Image (cartoon, rainbow, N blue to C red; front, side, top):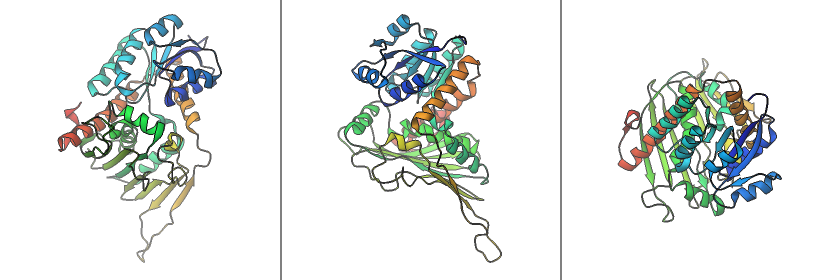
Length: 362
């Protein structure tokens, strides 16, 4: 397979499907062999790509006709498990947008099937490919233990953004959908296992399913004594005040992502802004003999950080290397399952108004 480009199908042609299709188009390791979607989005994406590609309504038929080597799944979350299992059974490697599935048992089935078939399964954790986010995590390791981690991503959405959020909430709450990214970051910061979680959730719109909530906050405890919270709200009623908080605090000080532009007015529902960092602020807690701070805060510029398109390219390069170099993805998959377990436990905690041990959903 290494002597030719990997033939890849994109399944789901919305925002992330389009982003990954553009990345495949720009990488020599891949050749796009088709687009799959039930509606007109595949036609719009074909025009955006400026290429004549085979278009399909059904993934199985697309795999059969194109003889694809790999499939990129960027559909609604409640379809992920079935599509991934189908693609793996058909002999394809799979790149799948988060989450792997809507249940931990489903995620484990997908990972186990990848192991059984000998195919690669990569989960789209885009922040793992962002050098400044990785620097943020490394700074957390210098702050001592325990850690306090404070993160949110509230999105004031209207128009197409609100439509997208309502579609996502057919299967997932906001703290589950985006929360997997930030719980993954917290797990990397603590290098400890999540232990238990509590949460709150509120339904603020009659336009979403009756048992769903579009605002939620979770609080998680780790085995090393560290704690963290994550907050996510979606909809036209959501405040844009303090919607972008990314802090970690330890005995030795704190580190923060300070994205003044990306965290500014009107940016909360801008997908491009969600991965931007702009600068890091490192605060030192040590005091001098006079009881004053012994060291000024350090500002680390991220002026040359990658944009969303470049991050998608980095994700797909990682996918290509995993296939071509036969890299072991066991840890990658296990960590994706662990972060999913935390947010699903939080979802349960919000609905049942109690603290949930992570083992209950694992």
